[in-house]
Amino acid sequence: MSPNSEAHGERLLVDAARTGDERALSELYQTYFPRVYRYILARTGNTYDAEDLAEEVFMRVLEAIDRFQWREAPFSAWLFRIAHNAVISQRRKETARGRSSPLTDGLPIGTAGPEELVESRLVLNEVLKAAQRLPDAQRQVIALRFSAGLSVAETARAMGKGEGNVKVIQHKAIAKLREMMGQPKKRPRVVFESEKA
Amino acid sequence: MKRLDQILEECIDAGISGRRSVEQSLALYPAVAVELEPLLRTALQVSGSFQSYSPPAAVEQRGLNRFLQDAVARRKIRHLAGTFPRPSRFSGFWRTPAFGGLSAAVGVLVIAVAVAAGGFNTGDGSGGTASSQPGDRSAPAVANVQSQVDAIRQRFNQNQHVGADDFEQLSRLLDTLENSASDLDANDEQVQRALEETIKLATEVADANPNLAAPVVQKVIDTTRDIAGGLGLILPGPIAGATTPTPTAPVETPTPAPTDEPTSEPTAPPTEPAPTETPAPTTDLRQPPGFLP
Figure 1 (cartoon, helix red, strand yellow):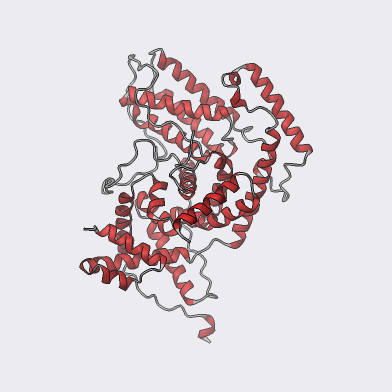
Figure 2 (figure 1 turned 90 degrees about the horizontal axis):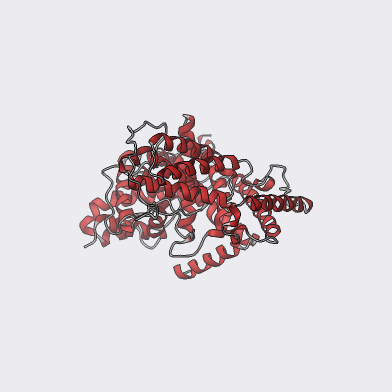
């Protein structure tokens, strides 16, 4: 599907959702929920926050979708602005309460799946920890580009920055992540229980 | 000639979409291959690890149910409320006591009809957001903010003393409002008015008195924009040549008061590059694009 027809399809979907079309709302939710969830996870490093805030973001979308107007900004940029605001708002509340959400110990690593999946979960835990040590703008670029899967253009829109600036920030963020995580390398193979026997 | 950050992005994009392997990208840019390779591998590893992770299915399903129930409840309320003239058509009238009485009567009628129609049953007993009237619990907080803004505005317009303590009080009231933000109704004109007038006042005062701009006025601006952003409202940007006459009265220059929380989202550190291609917009970056006021 070309980007133009994809954008057109999304426009039809969003417009239908605005009229209250349940199928469109459902599709919109299913398209974006995993991306919003991963975005918040990347920002907060906490699965509980990701669950709560992702739900809250979609409630805010319902409240605000009537006022969304198609201009130059894509729907995704608008949606992730709401997600960004939800994260900031949560952070403020926690600061006011004098506590902060701890980084999750680690995402559950099931050994039932393929080895690649287990390995990528280990990497993700490492990425989440490292990302928390990045400056905020860099963390946001990583979250939008790699966890939410936005393009550079969409990331720029969502952050209110120029595309060139986003590329520079992305470059720096990746360099720092690499520094913190070490060289990408093959990890020690996970030995499954069935193999031990 | 392309810079490394541009080449990196091109190769990341090609790698994520599966158009090119890392080796093919490195072969395309042999001059920077040594620098490019570890960055590209890291980026693709990070991307792959995120994309391989999905939220728990139960979480997604629970959220979807709540989302659709809320959408249905909202549609019913809108349908019922749509039988009455929208308050916005009564520009100016809505601030009068007569309108207050009328809107209360209409509100009671809408609730009564909705309840009779069974429109607020969310099904799972979880008490969806539509089970109470949005704004009911937050109304005093909105009124307090508006009252404080009106008081400061009056003194500001009359060239009387406006100090940091005024804004500290306003900031506290905004914090209270933010804490009840989930109860706010974005369509409530009182909410919109309070937020708009707060941002306008703070911006005008900051413009007129740069010494007062930091940090408490900035905090007021940030909090107001956060609340508005969460509601999907767009607020006016910094006002150039504000319509209100600039006061000449002396204004207290405060010692920057320490705050318990950040006045705004942490910005990029000094090492962060300045925008190189597109300058950062002069308006607040938190405005969600795609909105009209």
